[in-house]
Length: 372
Image 1: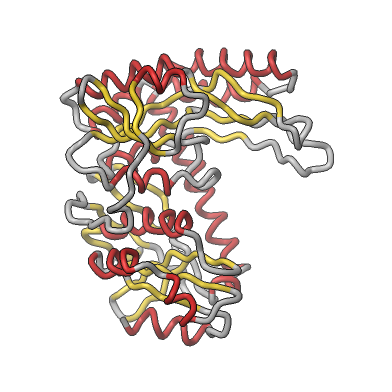
Image 2 (image 1 turned 180 degrees about the vertical axis):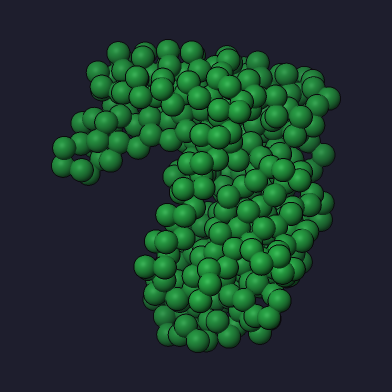
């Protein structure tokens, strides 16, 4: 069977209804408190001259590594105020251990993350680390990374005053990423000196060199994203029994006619001219609310699809599906654990919710997806 490939144009989302978080109150800080607080909250509000701004603080640079989507989801509900994502230009955890237990992860801020934030109407502040500590678990690992607070606060002040849209701001930040490369490298030199961990500064410097030119950044980052998606889709073909035999399909999510986010849902089912895009979360018990928010953030992107076509130029309709599965609970027990707010958010946004319990079969799950 031919691999399905989709190209989809995104439209601004004006009517997504955030219901799960309607009673959530984000922590509030002043700029002075933000500068001195020991640990920055995942999501919070900051007061700037009497105006509140919602902030999402990412621990790492990669969208799939430290699972930042729940903290981004939590600020999207805030209405009539500016929203900011603080994302490091690079995060390095030190070299791998000889025994392979610590893999030595190193991630870089992607070109398409700017695109995604622009689509979500979120300002992106690229940050850089200046502090970290040695892990107590792994000899060569650094952890507890912290950013330059003074720099972050100045950028927050700029955004509070700017009349630029997130798209305009993010476009400028992306083109001028080279302006903080030196500070990022200095930060890791300092971390290496203070922790004694041999962080590979030359390798970081070589990669960040491509960030000094907008076109080089785009080409390098988008090629890496495309390759990562290809690997993800192929891996799913080998392990599809874990997701009720659903296959992944590559989707080019196109924002503003030319900005592409290379994406792949957890699975898809095609029935006639409708493609069901599935985001799935599995747990021994019930998937956590953090897992659910991670899936919903991705589904928000699918809710923004205006028109979609296959690689054969055939127009299709897409429909978002959230599949939650449990290894120990029955479907009825899972239903009892779903809050009314969560169920209402799925209903109000026309998201098909499918619950798969310990005895659910692949045929049953697929039937539920396509029958709704």
